[in-house]
Length: 117
Image (cartoon, rainbow, N blue to C red; front, side):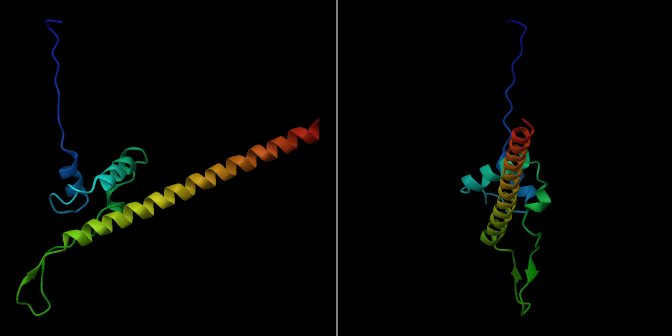
């Protein structure tokens, strides 16, 4: 054990998630459930970030041209939440369909086995 080297690396996930989802810094700091859902979608289902990210909106002049209007961070987080909910419901529906298909297959095979006996 004297020659063994142990290393610990800490990687901050939230800043990276915010960057890849086009969110302003610190916008996920109070969004624990959203962060968990995002992590699950990225890791378990390998959903690409562009399907979940907020639309890239740059600061633009106001309608009267007097000031620059930046995108609202709350709107961007809400957009990501809506994308996550839509993707989660799509996945849940597909899982239900697969369960239904498996049950139908099992029932058909059970009927087929009973009729051939």
